[in-house]
Image 1 (cartoon, rainbow, N blue to C red):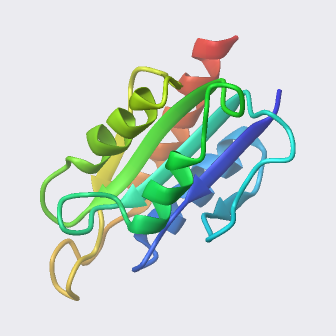
Image 2: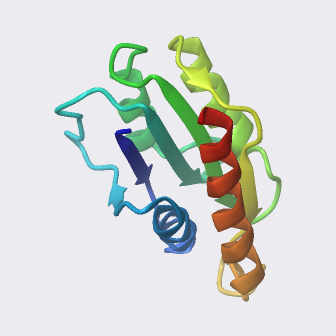
Length: 142
């Protein structure tokens, strides 16, 4: 099974979560960059971002724009946020609008914002929950 864990981060919060997920499924987490694309179709894409002004970062949006059900069979969404936990639903909708199957049960957690909000997150509990999310997601596909 071809599995990818892709993420964008500005503060490092989403990187921590993506690395926990990647560790649980036995792959390396990869940063979404300007020209990120896949050489082979992906059976399961874990994709995550932080919340920036009520939406995903423009690089994540551009990345999702170039995806299709031919390149990504299934997706699982995760994210971090300083305030409202709306990022996972935002990314989920972008993927579904592209016709990509999004597996039920997204993962979101608080992340440190502006040096003082949620300053201890993501913490060890958050990282453990992210790994459990990844394992549950894999079980849904097998």
